[in-house]
Image (tube, rainbow over all chains, first blue to last red; front, side, top):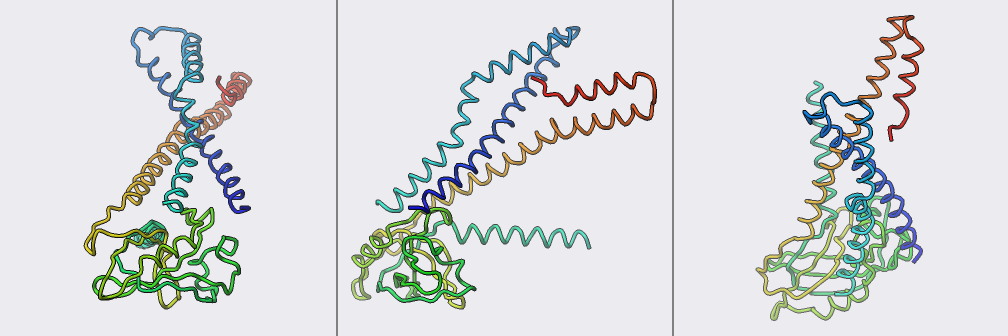
Length: 93
Length: 217
């Protein structure tokens, strides 16, 4: 049983690293998309840079509340489900 | 010379990865079970890697332990011996803890040459007599016949996932490079240009540079 506990701690540490990396990546991709959307819009050509900042800040705020960001928690859930399914199929069928 | 070294290293790395996957991923054999038994087995330093680690359920000692074995024969007459050990919870990730039950199932499916009963043994690992290592049986079930074709869904899913993971790691690295490392390097270059240009607005440049390090909300 102590082996199970050790594996759980190890998995939690590793998955947290993955979670942090995926979060940073996802945020970075979103910000790049917002910047490109603003920069390629011909209507916004003469706009102030403060307007651009506000646009990006609003976009990032929307991202913070989005389902997409919350779905990153699947990084924890999917491996746990796979482990449970594997243990079930291997031992109880 | 450099190209040759590079390609040698690449081929070695590829062989290592393929060997690792071939050892770890589940495989299916269609065999008939001819015997099941326990044997006190001494494990040396050369083959310990292919046995369960000492702290799993069925492995009481790291040197000599009682291991369950399953003897089988293929339809062409060649034989295969599986060991039947718990895997523990870390590696390889089969999370197997029902070795005793598996041994009973295997014993129940025993048959002889006159009246063969074909079974599918799911296992991982290699049989290498020179190292005295045996593949670890994970599960057994009755087969439709000696020619049943088993589709390795688990291996397919795992390999697709690994390819996906490699692609994602490359994309994440590219994003980090493009958005974090390159702008930082450009910032350093700018300040260096500033030093060379000297005097005019040195303070403003410094301020701009400090600002470039601040996190943009």
